[in-house]
Length: 251
Ligand code: MF3
Ligand code: CO
Ligand code: CO
Image (cartoon, rainbow, N blue to C red; front, side, top):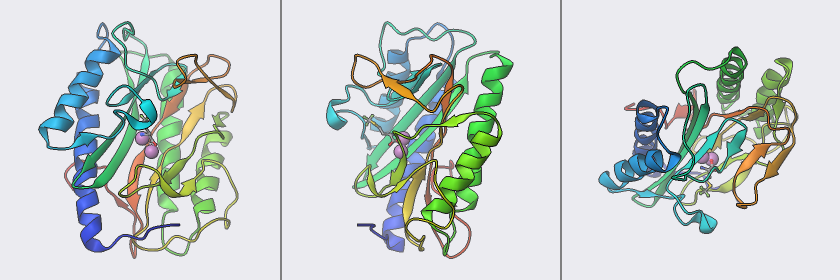
């Protein structure tokens, strides 16, 4: 069941998403070669808590930390660890979800550490562009499939692969609500978009294959061939005209 939000509810969601966006921006300013992913998680955790919010990932399905940090071939759900040291040339995805006043916020971004390979640079660029192609389609009258098809077309026309096993999602009082927002599919299909719907659009893009594997830690999802992957996510609301991007800082 898709829950359409009132304008009062959207205002609360914007507060949660503002905190999620600020936390992600802080992660981007803080991340550097030589630090562990655990240290980066701590920075994100402390910021979210300082705002009176809760890091929704902590304890979600048993997830042990406050955000997901996924390095290089790791696509999503990387578990922060004192043993995982970030290196020059890595690409690092941070995915932050917040709960504030009962409402969820969720966003993710892949960051570069110093100078990265041209291949990594292009993968990140295409993945972020795909997110914006999807957002462009998030207007009333369109359907979820219009978002999916736009994301997929941009990724595949650039020679990359969209992951099928994990998808974007509706969001509200729960982190994951209906509808699913796949990064693949056909234009004109799926639920119709109406004002007040709130969804997370989150292209998950692999360099060499659509396939993924889950590591023995039961969480970390990696590119099946060990090549690079990237992930960008915004939380948006459908409005009467342009999509409202709730995870842009200070709107
Ligand atoms: N932020 C993720 C998403 O975009 C979900 C977090 S998984 C968790 O849907 F286990 F860390 F909570
Ligand atoms: Co997320
Ligand atoms: Co999400």
